[in-house]
Image (tube, rainbow, N blue to C red):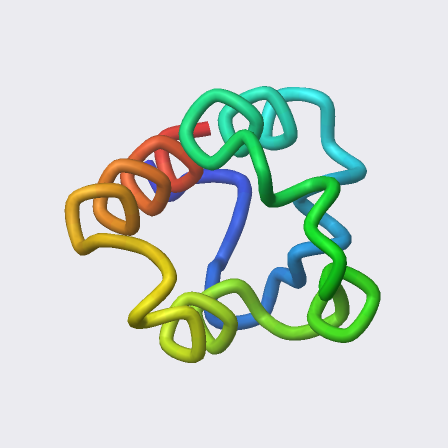
Length: 72
């Protein structure tokens, strides 16, 4: 059964508005919700944002975040 979120179309803002998804984000990437650039990227689809953040997040963190969000 597919998860609640399609990371190709779901925006970061939508994830941050969902309590379950926000909890995962805070656990895996705690600095993200309060990052100074959040206003510029919050309306991007999550997968696009993750591609742009390539050098900012290690692959293991991206994988963990993706898997946990998709499992919701």
